[in-house]
Length: 316
Length: 302
Image (cartoon, rainbow over all chains, first blue to last red; front, side):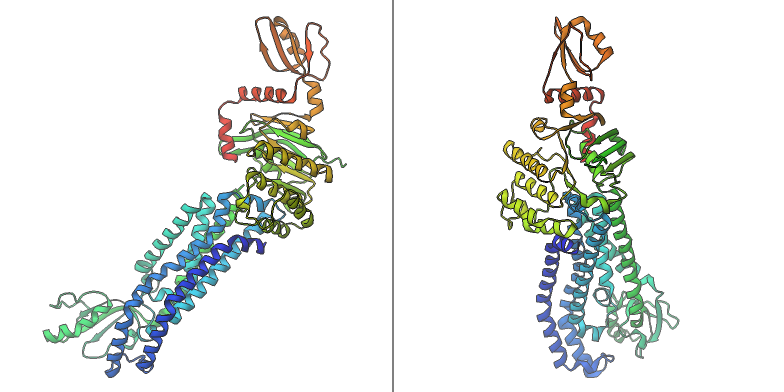
């Protein structure tokens, strides 16, 4: 059965491998470039105190050089969805073409056939997720060293979440395919659903999975250590108890990155005040990773089980 | 030959949604026979064969193949049945030799030598992609796959419907060859009646989702005389025999009857007619009982 299942999904597996190889071709040169720049600038020693003295300038120069690429690379987070949907295609195509009847009327039972097909698709999806994660983690290592890995766009190609994402796309396309037995609409729904679910989790759900931390600190002091590499949801000038203080500088209110504008504003206005931030600390990384992976992976398991049950009991 | 019938159904029915694709089907097909399953599109031929091979589950009634339930005992039964589905679906991206490899991997009983020898005999290169073959050649590959299981029962769903006359003849010859070589029991469905008499020795007529007739072809021919006689006497015949079809001209009445006795009435003249005409008479009868909805049933079942 394994040989048959492999032969039936060989083309799609090779396409997935091709996509990953193409990614490697794009990422490896810039990754090497970035690693050597990181090394030459002596930034290894700067991790943890990026803001101080000579490190500050070097870090700023390095980050501004590579941040742009990093933002483009963040789009690659769609790739796990693409691969998941792609690996669902052989199963759905077989139901559409009716060739499952050929297999089911050999001597193999329906249960074993479904187990073999779905098992191999899951294995290929996990392998692809592993390759994708390794590539991204390697590529981004210097940036992560300096910026942490909590921000959206970085978080979702680190750790283990990619496994959940890939399985989710696979499961969604399989479930739709078992229901409709039409490849094109099923794969489209699989990918669109992946995109929608990712967007929902990234912009709304993820920050609510754990209760966020808050910090208020005087502006003439350094920010609390907890904020290093944290995912800052909002940060604003405040009074001592953390309530918003109105500042007469336009564009100052807003999420994390704008904090850098603050000293300039304050210098011109001659105000001494406090900062307030709502954030998830870097120490929450694995807890958030686990929750999000469990969420996507759990839904994926339900979807794949549905596809198996539906195919087993309804298809003829 | 064992006494267990190759296929036996008892009040078998299958419903898709609110439409019965097959209903009240009771029949028995003996081992060693070559049986044609005929009926118009939508009569439930595909449904019956899919129930027999375990692809679908009966809504009511029961089906036994070689004495076993296809739904409950697929592990024991599947290796003993060869099945070629309608339009003989094959993996189009596979080569012929990969298709045979699939057969070897999925069947405990597999005669690879015989399969390669058959492919060779019909003149197909093993390295050829299945998707590039003609319909007739694909049908031959599908048949080879089914026969290499060394099945005791071969089920063929509309195997020649899509083939041109030459390919149809070649395919049926291949089936006959297999029968003479291994004595396999064959059930093949068809809505084309021509050619069947040459190949088959049993006939099952499915019409209007009900079985109408299941018998050896010899017996069918002998028991279905066409009677012609004076216009007025039809009622007397109808009392004694089943009238399948009745037609009238100004002075004369023709009756196709089913009878196991000789018709002695001197006012009727008895003729033998060919199988196709008998089948068509039954199909015409089925159609008048069950109009329109049959085509829908086939669409769902297919």
